Image (cartoon, rainbow, N blue to C red):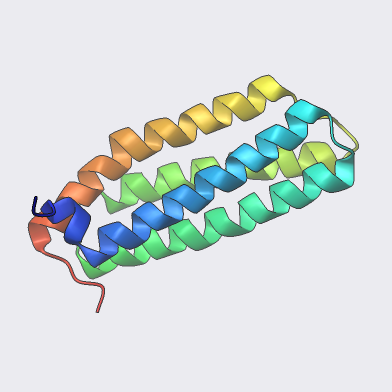
Length: 134
């Protein structure tokens, strides 16, 4: 069976790989919170998530710019909102607070919604443009 345009596009493939890593890190953070890990463990998991989120969103936004994505401004605003949520977790932990599981679960749900509802149209844009990462 031939690959769909969405699967064979290098930009899309790279973003999908990023999403897998992003969700793995988010789930690791969630696992640390759920297990009641000590703050250094939770902080380490959160640091990894925050660093990767910034990397991934920057790369996705680079692709938006290269392909002249019409929805870029709104999409970038959503990225900032997700990064702000991660920063809120940082502030809570830095101030000695505890991040509750419900908040982390809500964040993962927000990321999932973003992936399906906002990245989907962007991927369709990439597929329609025949964008190439080279």
